[in-house]
Amino acid sequence: MTTVMDRPPQDGAAAALTTDPGFGRIRQAPAGRLPAWNDALHRELLEHSWLIYRGVELRNSEELLNYGSAAGEPLTYAFGQIFELKAAGTKDGKTQLSDRAMSIHQDSVLPEEFADLVMMYVWSAPATGGESLLCDNRKFLTLLEQRDPELYAFFIHARVLYKNHTGNYYAGTDMVDWINKPTMRKHPLLGTMTPFFAFNPLGDPDCNFTARFEGLSIEDSDDKMRRLDALMRSPEVMVQHVLHPGDVIIFDNLLVSHGRNAFNTVGQPRHLSRVQIGLREPLALAS
Image 1 (cartoon, rainbow, N blue to C red):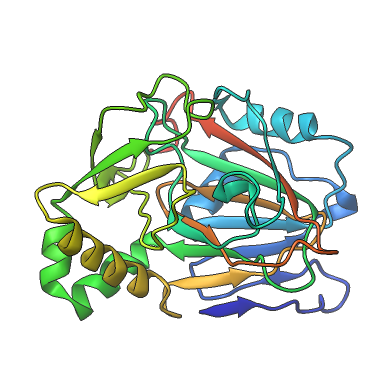
Image 2: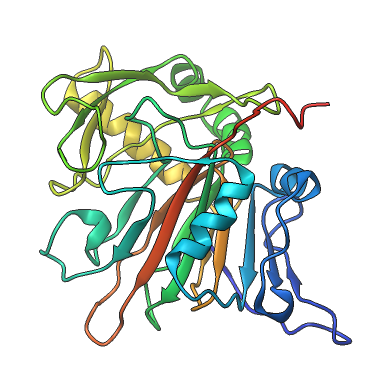
């Protein structure tokens, strides 16, 4: 995987850090403020999959929620519309609130409401470890077809069985029955089929869910998930983003899969606020 490195702006211009042409943009927020959300900004997000604004000064999490509300409708979960990702110790709480590594996944796979956009604000970040993993799903599909055509043919037609383990997280999902979902979903703006999944190849017993491919044994399912996970971590399709306090990370939930590296919470607090946004008019930008 490639680590996103800081580069100083040249000639006083705002930094535009590029991990790979067409995948991701990092910019310095002018005067500590986010740019107004509009169609042009959304088109840029569709082109590059994720945008990061550095040096944003927010007073509270509600300001992130208000910004997201300009892009669409904030989704409401059992915990509300803002998820405070405050990492505790290794054995404290579920994976999201621990210092353990988090599997590559996309948000809102289990609930019925779909998050088109994900926005996160970094209040504090560890000096080492805890990097956000960002995978370009479009590049991943191309790489998968090139390197493992048989696995590609399986994946694009497969379905995944999920079982929710957290009753106070996904409102309206059953903790007993398996939820059956396809691995691909049509992008509402681009019209193309993109991956849509949340695997647990790390076998983390404290993960919010269990996932396995429909029609396969547990062993065969785990083998395919591990092979897919390994490809998604290839340097051609994934970056590790080193978090900085004041970063705002915005990504298209169908174009980007994400995860997290493990870190040590001792003396290294990691606190992110996250909101998920559903588009009010998902075809408005298609023209």
